[in-house]
Amino acid sequence: MQFPGFYGNLAVRDSLSAAFQAGRLPHAILLQGEDGLGKSVLAQLLARALVCTAGPEKAPCGVCPACRRALAGSHPDIAIAQASTKSGGISIEEVRRLRLWAAQKPSEAPGRVVLFFHMEKMQPPAQNALLKILEEPPLGVHFLLTCSSAASVLSTIQSRAQILTLSPLSLDDLRQAALEQHAGEDAEKMERLLPLCGGNLGKLSQLLTEKAGQSAREQAEKLLMAMLAPREADLMEATVPFLKEKARFREIVLQMQWLARDACALRMGASSLSGSPVSQALSQSLTRERLMALPDFLEETVQNVDQNGNMNLLLTWFCARLRALAGQ
Image (cartoon, rainbow, N blue to C red; front, top):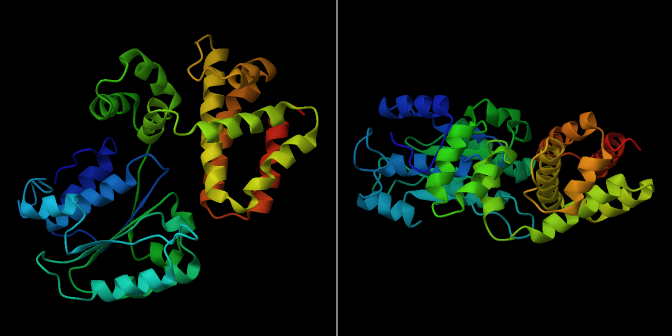
């Protein structure tokens, strides 16, 4: 099996390739890891490989009619669960629809493939509906699931799937991926950004592209400045809008993490990559120990958000920890 466009995680690739070529790929695979590590890319590669007609060693070949249809999103034996426009998660109705679809005879491939992205956004009733078909899967059907953390998925689903964890890329793997995915970018800028991304290609891509995350960055700067403010209420008030905006809060925390890493780089004598006065303020206001602990705390916050924690409790904890890191 081949893995074009997927980088690092050699042990995961070797395991999947061996199982695929031996015809022993599990009927359900759960890929876990932070956003930006390639879970969706890998799931779609597996889906294409399962319908590819070029043989197990070359699949997915990318050129056979089946691969071309899969790449175009029109293969009749591959289905992707569609998220609700209201909740952002996959609804119980969508799960039931796909259960009926999966039970039907494949149109041309040996079996059918169903992909469920962002399982952490699925409510328990929808996950329970999926569990029913995982307990007695139709012959030849494969379910490819992704989530930020398996802790957000029902334990009964976890027990019926092979869980594979994607890890951040090494600096060399990230550099190779960046050169292939972002050919033509300023090489010096790219090299300076690599250490700030924590081995995450998605984060690197976000930093290299245009200011798509500018609004989130502005809110991240606001929260970090509130962290340093004398009045404790400033930070609490700044987080109120996120009580019902979990996904937005997650995006902003990732921006905060980037600014915090930039501040760490400034403290160590490097020049700023963000150009943000907030990074400068952090590097000057926090002790070295507190500053170096800030990116790890923000990573912990992202993980807690992904585990579907109560937002009221989460934001209270978040504010208290931030103020403690600021020495307030």
